[in-house]
Length: 198
Image 1: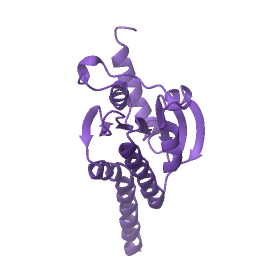
Image 2 (image 1 turned 120 degrees about the vertical axis):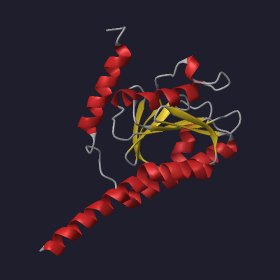
Image 3 (image 1 turned 180 degrees about the vertical axis):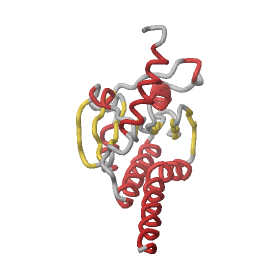
């Protein structure tokens, strides 16, 4: 079991991806756009203030074990709350915040770390954790460096270091807002076809 642990995990994740697809609360386009706006507003403040942060946005694969490792919050998302969580020397500033749908579900969560060979030595634990969770799930992880204020993004097992805010915004819109909008447009087209046949 120990020898084949990565393979077993991969199989279970594949099964989980199929089973959990579509189970999440379906957000409206407005809710998804608001999610991106709230996260970007918080990231902008954190960057300018050089407050270190690690924000994970859950997608189709549930992060229940990760959430259980932290402190439950279950609050409506707001930039003020996100920033406040990461203020240094406060009880919840270490670890990651997990956002499920449009709610801050938990803080101070412990993430799996990517191995040393997967990441540059100058990058810290937050970056390793972001890459680690992106390798084990389909979630998106955002890192703000407290040393430099630079923004990094981990998704699909790839870490993008020192990206611009506009780039991050476009990726989040593509991953969250546009995905839903495309589905809605497909539904509308199918509905229109059915009506025209009648």
